[in-house]
Image (cartoon, rainbow, N blue to C red; front, side, top):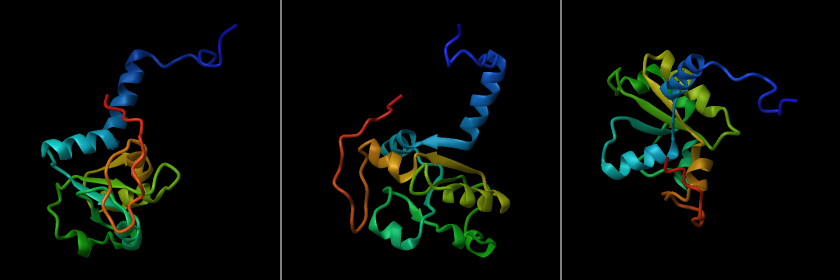
Length: 144
């Protein structure tokens, strides 16, 4: 009798390669963003798509505030069209990041989601900036 895991057969290696390669084209994670910041290898704009008020309370260092509703052709004309945006919101329970990504992609910008959002950042014990930064936690860092 198969387990709940193998009850549905896994995808072929070729299908898995296509699937996971495609996912990486759309997302990055908190650890990769943090490491790129530490090394200075930042070739993207990190954008917090929550409200400006939420941003001022706490945000990822190096992020700009870019509330989803403010993503307009006029505002984004300040950026070259090949600017890569890495967007995040509160966390996996919030689809604001997807709404922002749709707007950015619709305006012709490449975009990736920082999976986990602010919740993931805090869970990994990474530093925050802002007026009301919660106390650091000993997080589980992926460091993979």
